[in-house]
Image (cartoon, rainbow, N blue to C red):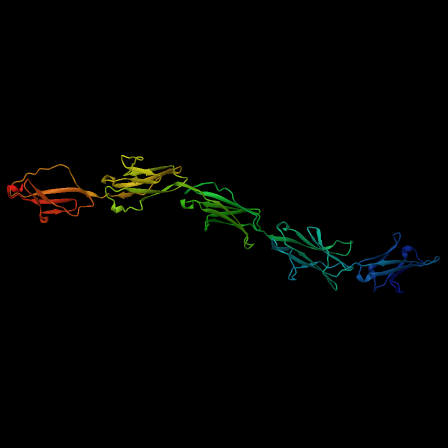
Length: 458
């Protein structure tokens, strides 16, 4: 007969009775309040054993097996049954004590600290609660053990970009008989851009020609937003696309003359990371034909230049690349180089004409040439003042009879127009001023009405 007892109980929990029977016909009995149908004594095995199914925590104890023989001495055996109770599934709390229900931590920024608390309830024996990062043990210290609640608090300081997608695992285990219970979380991060570069900006650009300029930024998560600037102005003609963690921004740019020497800027910024951005600047060199402006000398008054004066002009040239030839034009005809006979002196970007005459009147221009082309300046038209001159230098004889009235015309060339005319009668005997009422004038001409009354009037 085989009897099973637990601890110090005198009443068996299970029995096998083979008295007066064959072993195959043995009578099995299991205490209903203890094991019931969960227990079965397996006699087909050698040695035979007591099999317990669906182990309960109260099944733990010291078990004693007593075997009574009909013709031999009774034998007893003791067994210590330890029932292991696995811990609950780990629950992870954030720094504010809120349960993290997702499998993602973050997003975090570079330099942030991570504070996580792993909480486990129950378990016998007391479980080990461990923190792993990427399968490396980083914390095995229990900070709190209240009743059947065990906590391990992990502080991971100053996360860096290489920690992106790191796996944080809280593991609870109290036996090697089963796999540990784990809760896993993946670290998500917002990352600032690492690099920004203007890729294809050439050393020089032609004015008014369209260019496609590319700016590239890498390292941001999510991808960087790129902004173009010209000086303090934001440029809008932009197309942007991203490949993996690289952003490309294509600027359609048509430079003007005014853009020469300005800075073209590309700024990359992650809008999720406040205040952090990278910039790359490129100096703009714009090539264009000369921009030419002609100015009369600052000490001269255009309406007060008279014969005999010295005049000078300044040719203001804005040019990239530098001009290599400067020409001067008078009434569309190129002026000669420095000449003492013509009293023309050219010096750098200045033109001096000494002792001007009435023939110096007319339009003046300067022109400049560089590799991009040749440009003429504005016109300055000069009207040189000079004393009145007869329109003809011929002596004219006019025949007239006594008491016949004729009209004699005096035509002159002058600038400005004459303000007053004088007529005078001369013969061998006398010189007389003619009264104003006897002639009329219009600025460039005067007509005298004359009637000889005697021989002395010739």
